[in-house]
Length: 157
Image 1 (tube, rainbow, N blue to C red):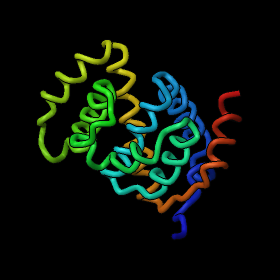
Image 2: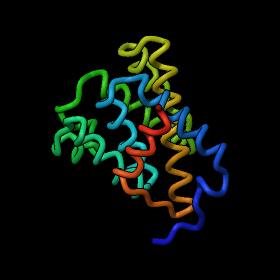
Image 3: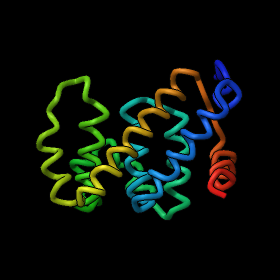
Image 4: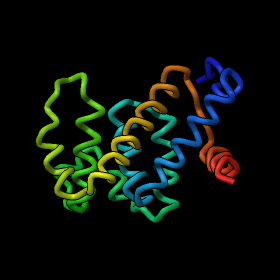
């Protein structure tokens, strides 16, 4: 796959701001939860770039192969906490909004596990990964996770 364009060369200031905001939002919740949500949204959206990247990051944060592999069937898998299930349900509901507005039960589970502030943080994070999925799929972007990690550290400094 060849990228259609270099996002950071085409719109450097906006992409840097997007990356900065994405990092701030992502770091506002626990890393393991953040990576599970990013992987799940990327599975739904069919984003190979983000799946590759966030499975690497999840493993670096200590996530197990079992939990990564079972994400497509998270509802049936017993290895996720109630908080993770609520986050994954909310991720599925928001990522699949075009399939119908049937998110009320997902919201009820979310309310039971997350404070109002955390609900906003999680929703922003879901929006960010869905945006990155669309950028990566739309422009055939592929990034090496080590390069992304290095750029993120530089942007945070």
